[in-house]
Each structure stands twice: as C-alpha cells, then as structure tokens.
Length: 103
Image 1 (tube, rainbow, N blue to C red):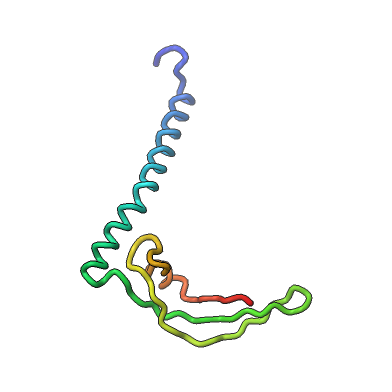
Image 2 (image 1 turned 90 degrees about the horizontal axis):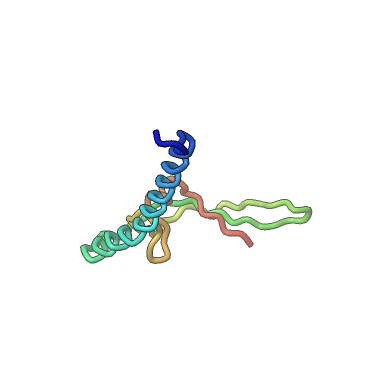
C-alpha cells in the first residue's frame, strides 16, 4: 500500500461508507414504502385488522400501577413497513398485540 495508507485508515473509510449507505437506504425506505402503500390503497387492500388485547393502567399511590383487562378488539393497521394513516403497521401490531392506555 502507499505510504501513509494503513489498514486502520482503510477500515475507517469502509465503515464510514457503510454508515452513509445505511443512512441513504433508510431515508429512501419511507417514501418508497409510502408509494407502495398508496398503490395498495388504490387497489383496495392497503389496510388490515389485527386482534389486540386492551388494557387500562391506573396509577395508584406510592408509584404503583393497577392493570385492568378491557377485552379483545379488532384494531386497524396499515399493510406497510412503516405506520401509515394514523394506524400501526400490521406486521408490528401482530407481534405486539397489547394496547395499553394509561390514565
């Protein structure tokens, strides 16, 4: 290798390039996901439903909390990578089927 160009410097340059590439992909992912979701909405299947369990949490004295089960219900979700239209993504809600409301 050329003088002044060490393996460590090469590794740092590659790491910086990898981080920049991940940032660019991350920034491009949302607009692409939104466009695909809008096409699905136009076709009539951009939204779905997931069964969730609802809980209400009441704060008690001494920093304690009391949980109350409110039953199960169907919740709207978007069939996309990111949440759209004020609803969570279906893949996320299917893996996290609890909705907790705090008072």
